[in-house]
Length: 525
Ligand code: CA
Image (cartoon, rainbow, N blue to C red; front, side):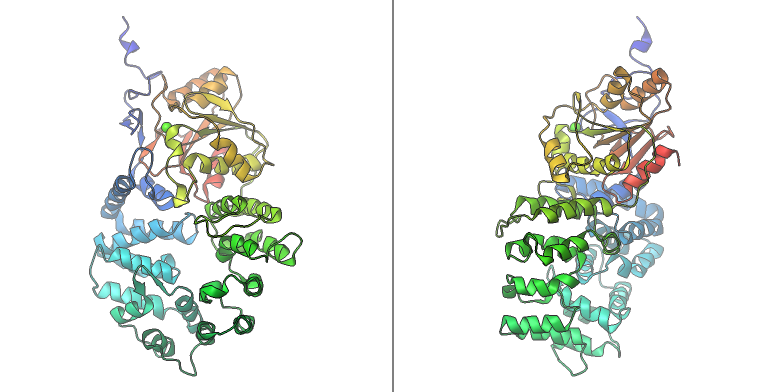
């Protein structure tokens, strides 16, 4: 008998930890590494916890994440705020809600320094009235309305010039039982320059000097015909669809006037509606306008349009009916192609590396549960297919694979459209999880790989060897200093990347910076 049969560092089953490596048991019963609280903060800010995961309910996943956030706040509250600002301002997360929640936590549970930082950055995180209402709703669960909070909310209003404020208060009027009127009263906001607007908000007073946008908004509310609506809209390009009474939103003429100045988010969210009402149809000039707007890289980035939002718009639009099923339309192919293009444009730019890449999607059962950024039907495994496409479209040398208990090469062409890729991945049967398979497969087939990119929740348990050990064996046998990037697709606390190995990196899926990070790491930068 050899003692090393049971205890060694070269090859241990995933159901047991690698000796001396400080591994932790993951939710599937296998051993991975725990990510530290700061890593978990990043995952939460980008992936959120809505809908839970295969292993944890929404409640459990939220609590685990919030506990990690709290430990970060206790360790360095100002650093937490900086991180929130960094990710939120750059639009790196699909949704701003986790950032708002974390900011509310700091404002309530942080030390003096952290609370000051949270209040100081309120306007950079809460960029719209809706964000502000969400913040107020969350922060009330952590603290009372002391002077700090009142001043911060007052500052949100007072820092705006009349045009900015008018736009915010007519576009985002209420949310979750909160309105601007409530907040102005609570925070005792006063200002000479903004006095007319405040009076209108609180008392409904319409003075002659009231900002034109609010006067036009009032006109829209009182309009008695579509003609009146169209005239008002034509006269003021700052008016948006949210300011128009619902009954007129069915009209193609109304949308035709709105289209040239439609903000980016409104654009991608209303494509179905504009197709259903007949404005967007083959060969129409409206389609030309829409396509050039959707694929305008500068505008996509300026409006912080997240690739996940584009992907969601694409998947909904090509289905030809809305989520609630009230609208249906015949999708215009040019629009689908434009959305497909916009998806890639909305990531940070990536330069090709000339390295050899293996893109390996974990398609096991656990990756087929939950909804990324709470988009109905968008599972982590479908989302990871779209994410892998960014690298596949950039690099010349890549090999696409999918694995659960076995690995299969996937024939995906970079010319394929995203909805097609997502569908193809969705149809692969799934099983137990063995994250060492990509390395094993490449070893068995003697495929030279510089970087393995594994898109997974790191809940691996089924293999007879750990992924990190399989990578080491691959390096030895192939004589290649191969690297491993683990793309975390669920906001849990695990990773298969060995934190002590400089050739392994853990990144967060659906951070807009992720493809660029993967590329830089592959190049050795
Ligand atoms: Ca799994």
